[in-house]
Length: 344
Image: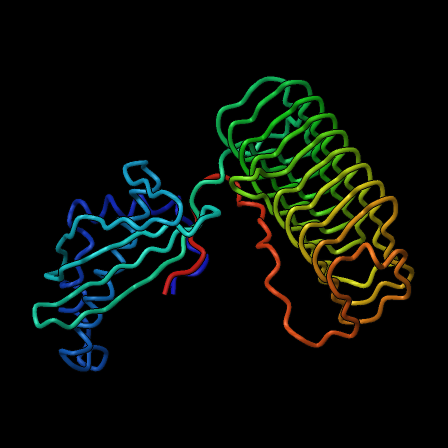
């Protein structure tokens, strides 16, 4: 109904509501009988407009900062009356800066109309400056490539539309979304989940996630783990996987396309199973004590497995069964502010 309406105009609507101008009685009184048709229509329209006022009230609360809803929680707003309708409003934080607002306007006879709206709120202010060389408290939004180097901590989540490079004890405590490639070198650490539009590379004691919370990864390109690196969750990639030098993936691996090869070398290990949607046209190779502790599944074929005995589970080619769900991939948030995704 209100698709494309922008949240920036809503404070004006709330102001109008506050001074009493958002009243539909004059409209109904002057509308022709052919439009109104019946008292039932009149009542339903009054409920609809009152429900809309409830949605606007909640959006104003988010924009003004007077309403805060933690992720995966729901808050009920104080009940109010407008147009002789009682309005109840709840706001649910769905995560990723998306809120579900539900407003129900009820007439004296018990008949009610419910209006729902999905609203994007937050996302922070985007900056074009990509070099982070001091500690940061809070989420960071970079409309560019980004570099975090040298004992720098971002205590929050990190979003960059380009490539992201972390090195030399750099740490991000939350999630990371990179529009391009993501590289971690020399003890770099990400505490949450990760999504990269391009390749993902970990080197020299770098880590994603933790034993306590896991840490899932989505990559639009290839995934490379080298030299004592760890991913504590599962991995979903559209490209190949190369692991070497005691690298470790604690969860499952989901490869969403046909690839030429999957390489594990020098004591590297996948502690879960591998699920390939497609074929391996060259080989899966496990050398120098590398291990896959679970099973290997492919909807297509696997041309060759070098040291198949290092797969401790079973191998299934042309598998037609159902795979478990891969990790949920994080998405890039909208720029800061408030906007309406849908309003029904």
